[in-house]
Length: 236
Image (cartoon, rainbow, N blue to C red; front, side, top):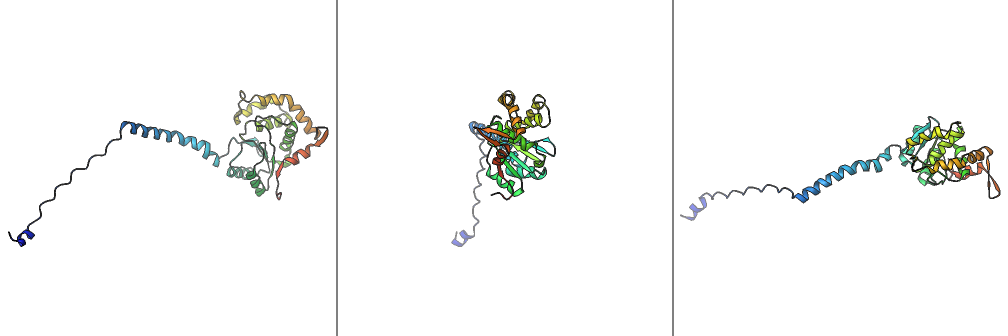
């Protein structure tokens, strides 16, 4: 066969490709880990929503004590606080858990007076400061008012019980169950009622007299209220 004949001869057929191997099923340990990972994500997602995302868009432990006048709740994400203030035309914010620069800035922007009282988280504290809190809550000129602490369960409950008793004229016994709707646990948080049993009349006496004795020096309730004023429109 000449070289020309060899060049013209057809090429031999290509060998067929071997069939692709089917994907291997994951081993039993790996399959178990995958299942556990899926379950973990399914469990974590609602927890993350509840703890970290939910309260960035909806109020936390929030409700009306006197609709249109007095509202209570927990410390709110700043965007939620703005929404509360806008929707309820809030004129005054009373924070029972102390200073908060971000909340100060928002209240200043919105033209809202903000008062900050650094009271203990169990709902007890200085009777004179509680008298000042009650004076603020009871003042129609400051309403609608929003009162809150960190969780909205203990300190805020003390404030609302004082209001129900001494402004509305009700009883602690009748008003106390209302706090259960705001995550107050009577079995764990009994010290709050013990504090009121010991000091409620003293708190109301300070409010009515408008003054308190501080180590031999008479201090007016207006001074205590003024010292708690954290921000007001135009205040640096």
